[in-house]
Figure 1 (cartoon, rainbow, N blue to C red):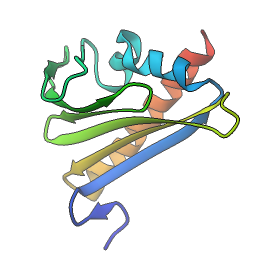
Figure 2 (cartoon, rainbow, N blue to C red):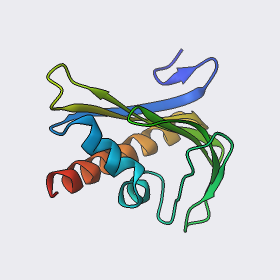
Figure 3 (cartoon, one colour):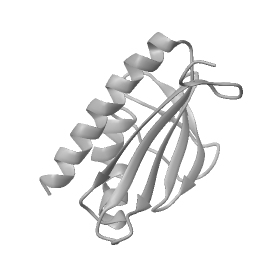
Length: 131
């Protein structure tokens, strides 16, 4: 099976990075308006209840599939599923942040989304470093 292709979730991509900020700081950002706009889309407003719909300013719709404070947010995003997850590093001062997207249509879309998520990660890291 090609890299990135799974039996259950189709094509998927994950991008992760350890950031020099504690979980509480990273969570506050990625779950707040500025962070949501960066990773989910401008205008996205999530209610932390499973099944709650959302819509971005760009017209992408989805619903909350999971929301565990300081741990992860999982949402449908059009025909795909996107998850942002946090894990504290051993020292507690850093956080591993991961973006994961599944149910992509092809290897080509997987590569486009890899570039997208790397760009999102760069923007999130820069925004956190500027705080």
